[in-house]
Length: 81
Image (cartoon, rainbow, N blue to C red; front, side, top):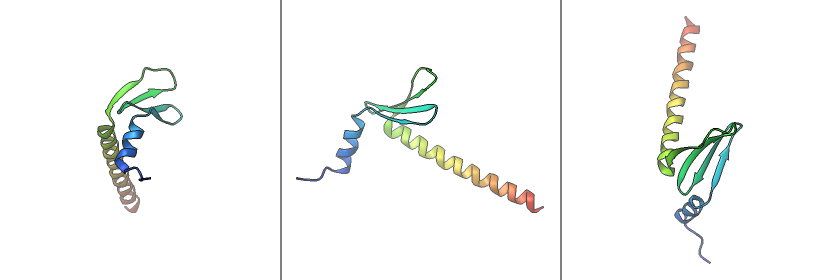
């Protein structure tokens, strides 16, 4: 039997209702759209199409890493003076 392609597996995953949770925030994938909801009962908010949200999240993480790196440099520089 042929092994399913990566693309076929991604499409199968997108067809499912998936949820990724932390203590307060729940990110869910419903019909290719990412939704954010909260355990305190606030209404769910659509974040957008899966690929767009993933790209935005990766960009946010890169920006956060740059900000952390710059903050460390500033702290190191001020301690050295």
